[in-house]
Image 1 (cartoon, rainbow, N blue to C red):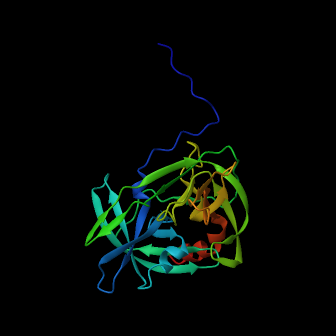
Image 2: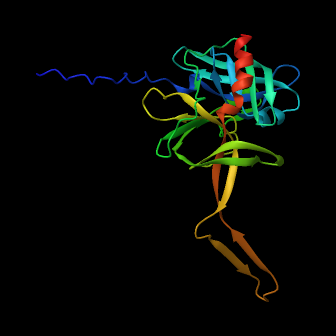
Image 3: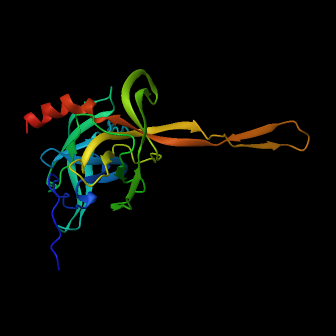
Amino acid sequence: MRPVPRLKGRSPMPAPFNPRQSIVAVIGRNEAGYDRQFLGTGSLIGDGTILLTADHVLANWPVGRYSIYVNDVERDITGTFAAEVLERDPQHDLALLRVEGYQTPFPLTLHFDGQWAYNDQMITFEYSTTRVTGNNVVMNPAARLGHITRFYDDHLPGREDLIVDVYELSWPALKGASGAPLLFATPDDRGGQVLGVIIANKEHHLSPAFIETILREDNSQMEQTLYMLPLGLAVDIRHVREMYERVAAGS
């Protein structure tokens, strides 16, 4: 059998990893330290103990105590670990925390140079279906695959005074997906690099818009249901650069 020649000038594909080791559920803890409410999704970056998520994920839990839920099957580590807030940036809806007691062997890296193309495949891994019942955390995470449809300046949802650089995605951001990383899905040197952080949905009319009309028998009232097409939004990861560099320098 003739040997298969190696292609020159190409780096080997990165080893596959379980996204559960790097992308986790963010939980709100009560004053006694018990996990009580699922808040969103986050990713472990830097040295593997820095948690990146959306700031509104933290703001939705006024108690101010947080943890992550980890299901690291490869190393037989399952459970919750406390996370302390390091820095928050409400202007760009970003936040960094430090996880205590868990360090992923596969931290995600941040893609600060901004190079990408519309035909690049993108992926996210998020925990929108997570439920907290009593002292139990039940997770069934999902992967979303697609591409970037637009890149532009937009107002943050509910904050018309704030404008940030955002990516519009080809899939919706379900409740609980906030804070999840937008990643390159290509099996090259960019695999596992974070391009943005999921924050919200942008609704568009279907084209053509579908309208369902209901009339009463006496024609006294008409109801119209307008179906919308929700598309996810992700904040450009470059907005976290200064905050991340301060945190990393203090590690």
